[in-house]
Length: 449
Image 1 (tube, rainbow, N blue to C red):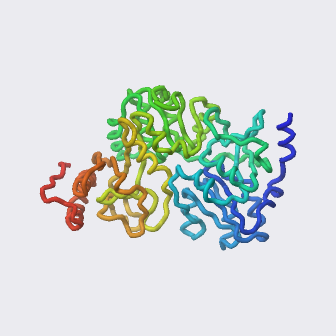
Image 2 (spheres, helix red, strand yellow):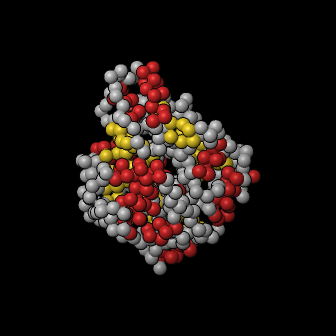
Image 3 (tube, one colour):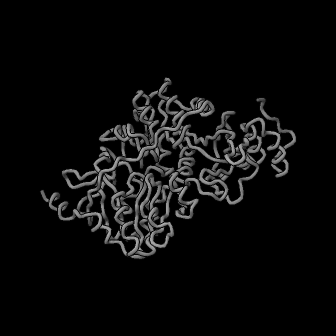
């Protein structure tokens, strides 16, 4: 076959492929499960030959050899769209820089603004027509390939071929080199443990979900709690439109609650752009015709997602101030994760007819350094904290103490409603803070605990 001939002609060793990288180049490692492993190792082996090679990627779930082998950062400089736990540790050591973005803009950044000298993309094996599936990472894969001077594919047969979606593959004719790797096991993120407080928050959200609603879930214990509760509920005919495919959607689908039959758009298909979760989730996604892998500029477009009535978006945050400003990505000046698509879904959920956007968080956390209980609702965000969601886009916030809808509310109403869902031990101090800031009315009455 012609495609197999082309494949054999372009098949090279990883050592040969990384010779395409020159000092000063920008090399793209894509996102999440598209992270190259064999090519990364081969490029790291060229450390002493190269200087100032800039690596761009995001949500790297495995150690990067270009970083591990070059702690001086003179040869390789890693930059991330969204920190994984590993990249957060690198950043703490000065070995990873964050790239600010609103997730839906990622393909546009590549097409309009960014240079890509060499793209390393990990893909599923080629099919009989000559196409390689981008598999569980579609975010901006095609835009990266279009922009790159050289495109190198690292084939991993552990990556599932996905049945549905668009712009979710690349043809052998569009590729410069193919490398067959060692087919390492895919990194997994098993569902986080669910606490009693998580269950209380999830139960409040459950009361806001109707039959036929379309659901978006972020990552973490709270979305897992919501998915589990939905699986055990009487809800039916739910839809999926999300950026990240997580285990909770599989749990809902297997329980017969998620079938996508009531969606206004993409009916019958669960829309997502990238996936990270358990091995069971990866197996479930393989050739699952209920799923559609799409670029992030579609999945996260607020005007696209809002065409689904009753869109319910559920995400987490770290801290919020009394004005309704949210940080979901930093602790003071320390970058924890990234903006991701939270603002996209916050906007789209509110635009949807009957839709709602929920930002969920436990009302308190224990400071690891001092061992003291701290409130996540603050008078002001910490110095140098990044505002992920501006106060002008604040909608519904949920703690174990209730739901606060801030949409269209004045500054004093916001303060009152947020203090209502703060932990009781911190409410009096927050009232004093609100009074000091001039956003408290003496006639305000808090709800009884």
